[in-house]
Length: 188
Image 1 (spheres, one colour):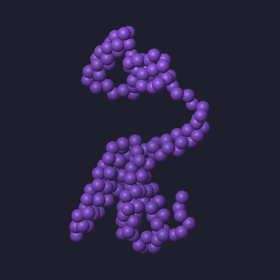
Image 2 (spheres, rainbow, N blue to C red):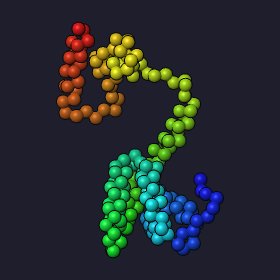
Image 3 (spheres, rainbow, N blue to C red):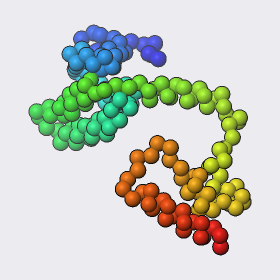
Image 4 (cartoon, rainbow, N blue to C red):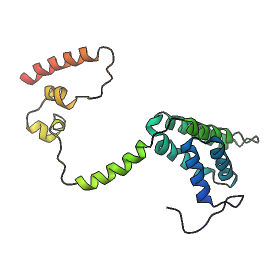
């Protein structure tokens, strides 16, 4: 929500409107538009705010569309901080800003992270105090699971189940071996 007071940019634009224009242009992949507003906000002395907004955009508007973009953005922020600390006279610290903005503009976008925030927080309110702990979570790593006599075998057959697995070489083989060891250990 925008504040009730008005902040102006260096060229007289409403700061909150300029910030909104910057993010919406990134969302749409409008490079010239986004870069104009980035420069306007930066020249107005709001570099710290701009980095905060860029980091938010990396999750809110890019998110799962390019899941590694947040890592690149944080590395660019670290580069910026380093260059600012070095106090160079060639304004080299602007380069990570430009790269961050261009990275976001050109990235594949997905708003699913932001939508998930909205949905899951509301769902949580609806389900609080009603939702039960699932049976598969009650394994040898919980007090209740231990009281139920659940050991390693139950853990490997229920608690360690991965539904969207990307198996690596020998993973199935090792799982079978561990289940056999668990059966022997649980029978003692």
